[in-house]
Image (cartoon, rainbow, N blue to C red; front, side):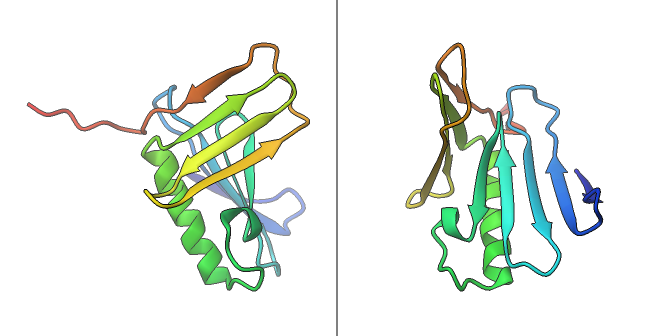
Length: 127
């Protein structure tokens, strides 16, 4: 885990960089004075909260942070994927059994369309 201020010192970015190469990196970014958070994972999927997490527009910063936590835990558990199309990327996160979040970036060209399913950060080995 790493955290630092933005280059212009107006916000904070936090990263989770897994040791497992099959897992998705996770980051969260916020600017001082705004109740908005961008979360990113994998090959470039970015969700803007509160909107793309299906929170109300007037969600409190605490509600947004709870959503960031739930999304981070889903990424750590490997419950996310990137669907790479020729001209777009669609990120999917399964936050829980009832909530699946999707976002599409239409300006993200890929020469080899495919689905990238990310592994959990760790796995439990039973003996």
